Image 1 (cartoon, rainbow, N blue to C red):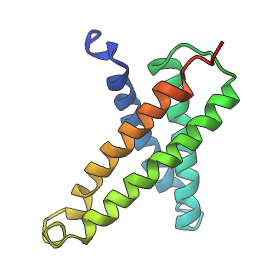
Image 2 (cartoon, rainbow, N blue to C red; image 1 turned 45 degrees about the horizontal axis):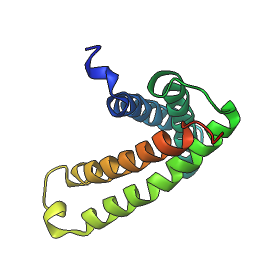
Image 3 (cartoon, helix red, strand yellow; image 1 turned 45 degrees about the vertical axis):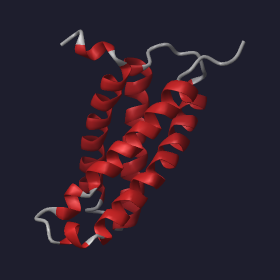
Length: 134
C-alpha cells in the first residue's frame, strides 16, 4: 500500500474521493436549512477547502507558499477545472443513448469528473503547490 501511495496522482485521487464525501455530506446537511443553490455553493467551498488542506499536507507536502495564497489558487483552480467537468456532463446527458441507460445521469458524471481531476491535478502540481521562482 505504501508503494502505491508514492505517486502524487494516486494521493490526489484519494483526496478527491474524500472531498466528494465531504461535498455530498455538507450539501445534505446544509440543504436542510438553506436554498439548494446556496447549500451547493457552500458545500463546494467546504469540500474544496478540505481538498486543499489534504493536498497541502498529504499529496504535495512541501509548503513553499503562504497558506492563504495556496488556498486561493486552489479554489480558483478548482473552479477552472469544474467548468469542463460540467460541460462534459451536460453534453453527455444530451445524448439519447445516455438517457436510455439505467443510472445514465450518474454514468455521465464519470468522464467529467476524470477530466476535471486531470485539469485540477495539473494545476495543483505545476502551479499551486510548486516552488515559487527564485
